Length: 211
Ligand code: SF4
Image: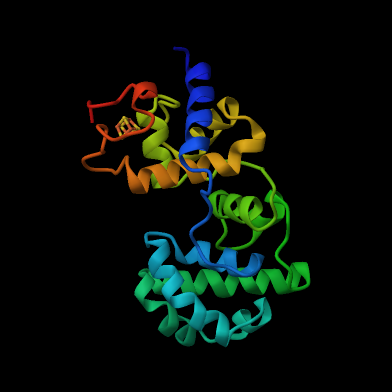
């Protein structure tokens, strides 16, 4: 099966396996999703969801977070790890949102990625899940691993993997596709000991029983 055909078959199969796949970070608005995504680096969504209720209760707007002290934010987000750099990124991003965008999270890739502390992956999460815009494919550790195992890319950097996926997956499915790979990566195709035996897309996977 050619790569394009396999990609189309995988899209079809995963849409059936995970019809309800969604972003597992809890958020009520674009700002909350942006902050949660910054906090999710090297941390589980579950852990992020444990600290954000307190964070968003104390700080309701970008202006609140921009004006908060580094130490106060660090205290609330400490358990997510790398809390010094995350607190710094949150304050800088929020300061930019206030100074350049009137306190509202911008809705374009260009504007989002010029915010300090926001890279393409975070921007893709916000655009796809808070604004419903398919501007790219979120490539995190699960998406990287699964795209390689499924033979959809030979690349190893997130930027190059995203370029390959964008060519193979229909644009309307970009946000869904990253959810599907993330859900499959968490539930079935784990980094160690993937469950190839029980895998719903085993017949489409060139790495089945080889990892
Ligand atoms: S067959 Fe195995 S390696 Fe391939 S996607 Fe399924 S769990 Fe992962």
